[in-house]
Length: 145
Image (cartoon, rainbow, N blue to C red; front, side, top):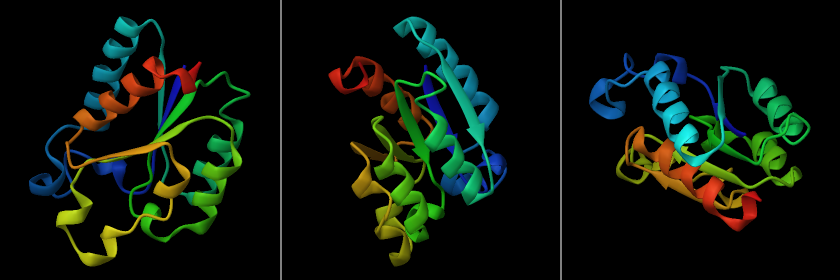
């Protein structure tokens, strides 16, 4: 199983700033990822929280729940949260960070991700397709078992 975690404001995906984030919703992402996971012989579990502590708890429990890897879209927390970065670094599972928008083409404060350095890789700016690329990497890479 690949755990897909989404941070603050991603519950508004498809409604919030569609010119930046597109019109696909998290339900659309879930449906696409479930199809991809079936094709790859695994499953995905998608979660979203606006609360930093919940994301940290989910990361801490991911291996015990049987996750082989984590896709993390930390939202704005990626730019600000040392605690979330430390939670990624604390677990032994591979984590791929995903951002729907190209954070490097946006405001300067978005150009730096605190969480990215603790991840095995980052997919940014490819819209919701980035989630599928991250899932495919985790399933196909030797680091995901």
